[in-house]
Amino acid sequence: MDSDKTNIEEQLKAVEKKLMLTQMADAPAMIVIGLGMFAKFGESPESLHPWLGNTLIVDPALAVAIPIAIFCAFQSFRLMKKINALKKLSNG
Image (tube, rainbow, N blue to C red; front, side):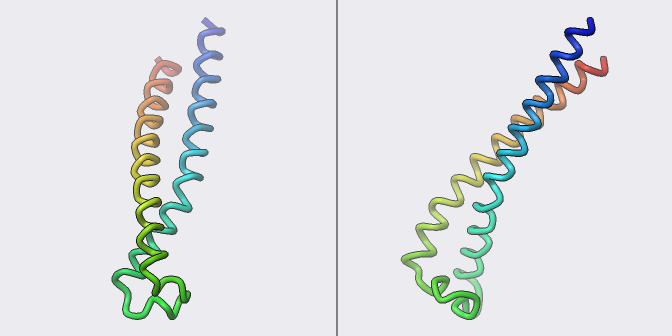
């Protein structure tokens, strides 16, 4: 019984680590999306940085960042479900 509980705890730590890495990969994508939205809808995006006024830079950046953010969101959701299932197993 103890070995099962330690195995579940090890699995829980591994999944939590994967979740943290997923969230760290998601952070730059979210920053790029925020800057891209500011560049698209802001009054004068060049005031923050000259590149934000150039659609040849902003559009491809958004085209890369949005799928990464969506992928990370799905991965985070899947990992959180796994964490909840492992916590139920370890408590039950």
